[in-house]
Length: 310
Image 1 (cartoon, rainbow, N blue to C red):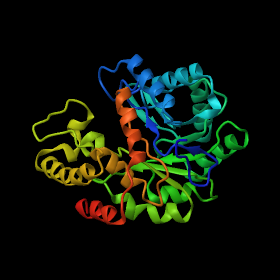
Image 2 (cartoon, one colour; image 1 turned 180 degrees about the horizontal axis):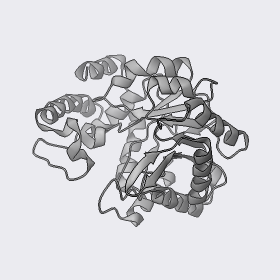
Image 3 (spheres, rainbow, N blue to C red; image 1 turned 135 degrees about the horizontal axis):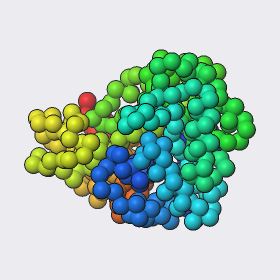
Image 4 (tube, rainbow, N blue to C red; image 1 turned 135 degrees about the vertical axis):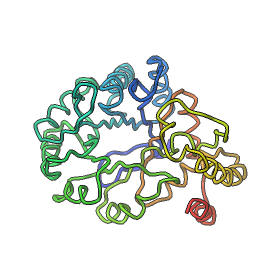
């Protein structure tokens, strides 16, 4: 029996290792994606005990939702899977604009339901905050949709602490998704005390820092996708980060595990974090991520990892 955990105060029970699906149909994020390979990695995930799938309108402007929906439909056991998606974005020409207005969010949920070929979404996020909509009003319309049975839990993503507090004025926010990994630890100071206090589950994105924390890169590598613009992939910073990752390899080797497994297992030791959603581009990466569940860190190892990346 695969380990299961509850997401915060929701009734969503999941394998703590989920799947981020930005590389499934996310043609605007990664060049040269093969859609059949993407569907195969979703199939591999659900056939090996992953039941939490995280997608978004932004991933291929709806294409990821469609592909994930096709695989879930084909599997024929909708109730066994927890589907998370994100909306609140619209295309203006080639640009993406944020829109958290209640009317827009209502339509976004309807659009996602169609693309995912389902009559309910387990977790719906506002993907990015806009400038104008009061956040409690935006969440308020999601609460209405929750009461109607169209969504089961409410999330926000990329919100500041002030925006989160406004969104959670009535206690309706279940999940906050934000950028957090061992190289970007600001969330520990900014969010964790509030999320823990309010029983809001924090789900980190970029948990492996776009692969840097997986221990597979060396200092001579170059990148031609979104990684080429990320500060932690630049010059001396890149080399220093690789040195830190090498220190993790000793712990990984002692456990007969890979660096990525140790990193992901470390996140799950946090009270604020119930589930992680590493992405994958190939089915074997999905299966590899699941080995995290076999890694058990001692208090000493947890503190050592903390020290390396302070």
